[in-house]
Length: 501
Image 1 (cartoon, rainbow, N blue to C red):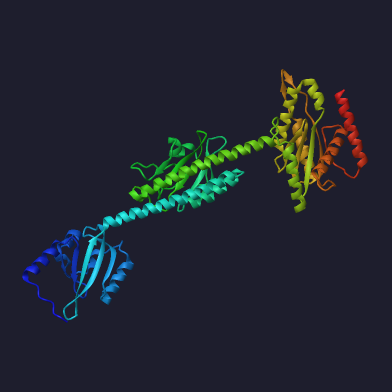
Image 2: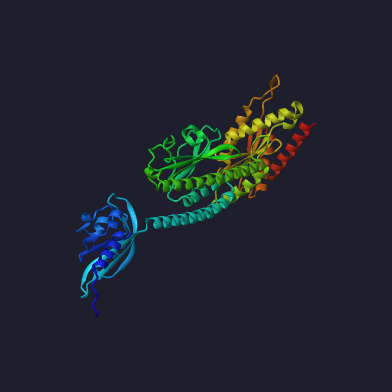
């Protein structure tokens, strides 16, 4: 092997100048990895003087908590094997500030091939890594936003397809748990009296389960969203019963310009003291915008469901009495009959009729008649609370659906209702209207009625019998005596003709 020509003093001087003026850090270590020499760039970057570095291992001096352990292991293996390695690693300055370097470690051999040193060349790349981090963060945020928009769109479709408030609350609970991972929260809605907000929906064990007053929440007081933990002055809402350990967001749910509820989102994955750090603050802003969009979707879906419920309620409610109408009665009877036949449980129908109602209308006018029907409807609705449901079928005809009751239990209920109606006193003009009475007929499923029409007919036959016996009383159908039923029908027709004359 040809020998390397010796360097002249001038060449050595120039090389020394090059090394001393190099902007890259150059460190020489012995074969055990202990520092034997550093250039001035080392001190400029790390804050350690050359004298402080002598005899130290670079890793022990410069690496710390954020340094990748896998990279440290790769460097250690390369040193043991005496092979070059190029990598990127986090180091710390003497003052404890973090920085990134591109690190090249090269084993140095003398002219005899003996390993005598390691040379490390470090170039600071903190700015480049920060730019890469920002780009990656932006890419991740863009992807997160795309995923959030996609999921939000799916949740929106489900919300607007819900047919009831209960369905809607189930979708909100499961949807927000997926849309806002790592959070917990709840939806509060104003009660009908609007004096409190009720906890109607939650996810990930959020909310309190108790009603809150409007003044308990700063967001509702101020009329806009409130993020606790992000400002210099932070005041916890009174509905947050324990000292907050994580930031949270409260958002009023607005429909048609009025607050109808409150959405509460706790960012459980984030410590409260981190909330004002730039990255976390930016993330809270993103979560706040997402929660605002959720609140808007929820308010629209709630308004739609309530409108549908209102329209449906109008279609199945009697406008005069507020009781369910004939349409609802027939549909519900069919469902109850199917259930009773499947489960072999009793089902009974009570038919009510206001006694002498036509004569009452003729004598006192239709306004008085409407007052009577409203009072009767209110009494039926008030007393029919044992699982039974009162309905107005038309005119002075009423019916009570009694699932789970046999004819004896239904007769007891009918007697209570009859007595309650007999106690009604109605003021009209300068005086009072005459006493109101009702007759009732009872029919039980399977005796022998097995359809809605059969039940209604059998109950009507019992009602005619109650009228034949003098009105203001209750009769139970006797389907085994068709002649008696026919006689009751004829008697009722005769009574109606007499009332009309």
